[in-house]
Image (cartoon, rainbow, N blue to C red):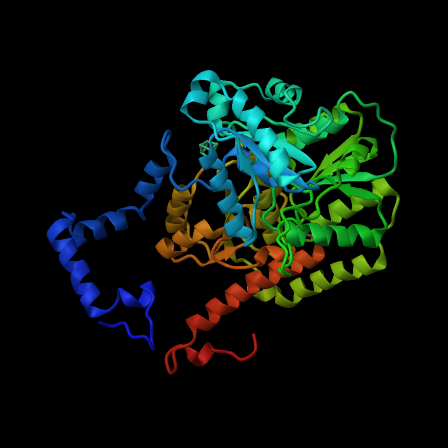
Length: 512
Ligand code: SF4
């Protein structure tokens, strides 16, 4: 036996020991009825071809490795941004186990949410009793200040009416009549998690703003959007706005909720936008969305209430940050201070210092529509080419907008935009039109394995690296971090490529 108490082998080295290799080979030969190594090699080669790519891109019904999640995940994330708010997903409980584990694995933090645990009988008779009992239990067990209700697809298919169910639950005394229970229908079969975010934020605003008269003040509302980097990003955003002296409210700030300290006390709730600030947000001068494709319905609603609105695409890099800060400055009447101007200049300086290593580099980028937009734009700023820009949850309108953005730079001329495509499509693209770097999330590691394209993890979810979300990608500081991460990856590649003594190490330079 290879195991010994002094040197315990876990699964990675253990199954490479001779007896395990022998056992697995015998199992394969005797019982697996495989097609044979030659056939597998032939098929693997074929999957790299242009012919296979054409077949792959013409898929109509089958989706393989989509880079998106379902609406309620976005609703659970959105609810986490509000003070002492419990997310209540009306429907089947397996969904909630998945949302919680998905968010926990990314943030390495607890994620609280409850389910009304509908089962087969509720599918026939409706989930009213589940709502009545579920709200009562949630209210008494977890002492929330607000319960934000969304739906799983089962509740949507049977057509449960949230508004009347919640009212009935209040009438039956599950929660006090005046207790805040905003709700949003979040059908998993429409859009993606970013639409669930949009619906939930809109539901929360409606809860506080409906039938209220507005008297315009000077403050600005900011909606960050679904963002796996909210911890670092929201803190960076607040730092910049505080430096400018702007009066603002972030509508949905999960930066503390997903970053509580380990000091002997578990905090079910931490931070978040105060409910009275959400209510007061009706009187803001304007509402800005930092992720356009996450907030279309919400901004429509805000505009109906009489506020000025504007939206951005994830403020990362020089021009995207410039645009956000200039808009904030114009709305608030506050100048952009010298200290922020210096930060900008330092990012420009860093980009100039490293330009030789980034010019002409080719990239593939995937993720949510706003992230892909921002990342591609920043790549253009560094003189790189975002050859493949893919968003499974990107629409035709997003595709058009992306193309227009790419046309603004000569580096965008050979680039393609892939709306509605998945990571199996991306696999074919990487085999047939090679790039230097793939930028995406942890699911990209399988593309790295299959195609040999190095992966940079820059967007949700990041399951197999720790704590990236604690550092910002937004603003000039965030841009510096993205720039450094890209450069580190390229320098590691240069070093790996030149490390063999007497063979390639004539280029193994000390100074790069
Ligand atoms: S797709 Fe439907 S069943 Fe699956 S997690 Fe989403 S809501 Fe639940």
